[in-house]
Length: 357
Ligand SMILES: [Ca+2]
Image 1 (cartoon, rainbow, N blue to C red):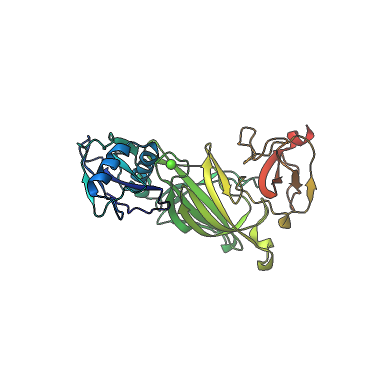
Image 2 (image 1 turned 135 degrees about the vertical axis):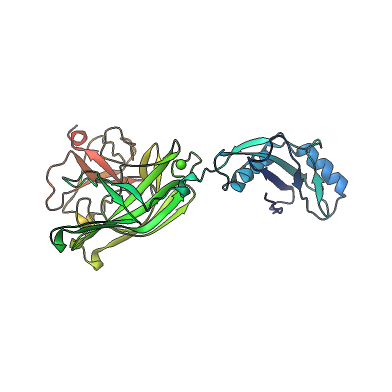
């Protein structure tokens, strides 16, 4: 249950609202809603009457629903909460000193509102002891692999120290509803550590049909992921990058480019949503051998896939620049590109066939 004090911003149109949430475990039906009306001058009865008359006002109804949704977040299992919200509009001059309790039997109560509540089941899954995917990063020859970890790690012993590979979480799972379907999804960062390099993989699981299902997608071109925080249906990453396909050992500290990215899932795909929409892969020219503007009506996409979501449609971007291959990378079916739209630059992928027209 939450109670919100009024925060008048305009005396001529002061909005006071309150709501009460009832957990799914409680019986359905209407319940009492408490509305605390605060003001300075008018009698309580006047304000109560005004409240009743305006309780169904669309604006406050929406506000009450939003608050009811915000009040959720702890229930699990049933996934819904039955709440009763009541919104009150106090018109100019019609205020009250003290508090007034309105029950649902009063004329001002709204019908019970069924609001979805965030399903937090994902937080109960043991991701420290499970089999994870190590997604491909578009480096030639890399394929998605599976690694079974225990207590958050796995050591693949090699014949020599040079050949031993250690997998371990460098950031434990954080949870956010990445795809906006009212259940928490999970993100963690696993490092692949070999003798002379480390390579971070962003691991993403979506909660689907009662279990966490890992996406076969990570961020290419990262040297490190220094921080992961969850907020508002996304995760924020502090990263430093290298070329897609390059190893981090070739980049000195003074060459490392650090960025803060917001990553989420849109239309089922892992994408960057801020500072601009685009591919999660890095495309800073610092780490490429050439930067070449490309002509034509191109459709850069969030991943090297003909069906992937466009970063921009033909005619909506100012310029697209193809980033030349790094050492060891030869002809590719797809190129990572920079896409300029309205003064901002994002990353995307353009197919060789698209460039040829
Ligand atoms: Ca979700």
